[in-house]
Image (cartoon, rainbow, N blue to C red; front, side):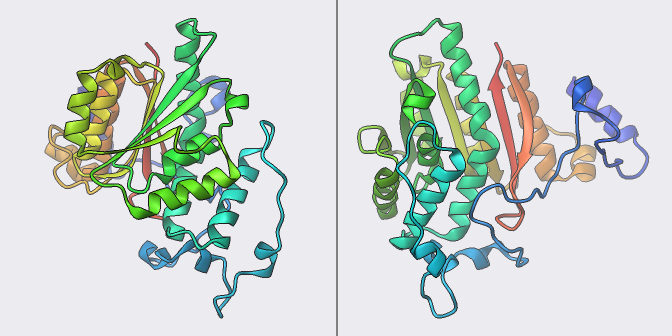
Amino acid sequence: MLVAVIAALLALPGRMPLLSHEDYGAKTNHITSFDDNPPFKGNVVLDDLGCPDLHRKRIRRHFADDSGKLLKALSEQEFPSITSTTSTENILKQIVHRFALFDAPVDAKEVAESIEFYLRSGKRAIGAARRVLKNKNVTEGQSIVVKDLCSGHGLTGMLLAACNPPERLKASMQILLVDQSEPQSHAMLRNLISDVCPWVNQETVQFVEANLDDYVAKSLSSDVATDEASIIISTHACGSLTDDVIRFGIESRAASVSVMPCCYTGTAKGVPYGVQRMLGVSLSADIRRSFLLQENGYHVDFAAVPKAITPMNRLIVAERRC
């Protein structure tokens, strides 16, 4: 299959034509266009300044005026208590409001990245895990495990739990955050989220200090590896670490794997030189990763976050179908 795709790409004259909604339609079960720089979906919207690192400022400063005073509209805003019917939009608004109000130790760029990653992959990941539970005829004590690998402060994994209250999910959710060391910011972010979403707490969120190789080896040799209702996520695992995350997802038969790769040098090995020259290393690498997932029983799609957050903004979203 990969050889046929590559041959077709190389046979195209000049640049590949852009697809539009007029070319294909969802109603006929064909592909639709892909937006590689979509608009923001969440409530932390960054201006495109040409350099995403300019948004590496505390989330409070993002909502402050020129004098550093928190915007009046934000400081006086009040929210109702979270219930099982509270929308994802309002849950995220309350979390961001609390981050800004208490000067959470996290950049606006990182908050926007975690929110946009979740809004573009979370629903499909949860759906894949629920299908696994349904197929296994699990009706009581349903549990979904989210493994946020190379997690940094762990905000992305915690947002996934925050936006899915147990009463609405009809299942418990455990969050495993894995990185070489636990940043001081992790506990502060978790506590601020817990003030809004009490089910995100020290009992449901565990930070595992380990490098990825050690965690994978230990996990695959234990009963944890047989947990099929697991969700694997990773945002900007550097270089080949993204490949390690994907392989772990496949070997542990995770219900879904969602990654946003970065640092592509050397990651397109195995893809013909001509394809890399035509498509670029990053897209060639992600196409290779997509075929690997598909060959192991996953339905694979691409998504993207706004480029104002990061130029390496492509997501690979995979759901296990067998």
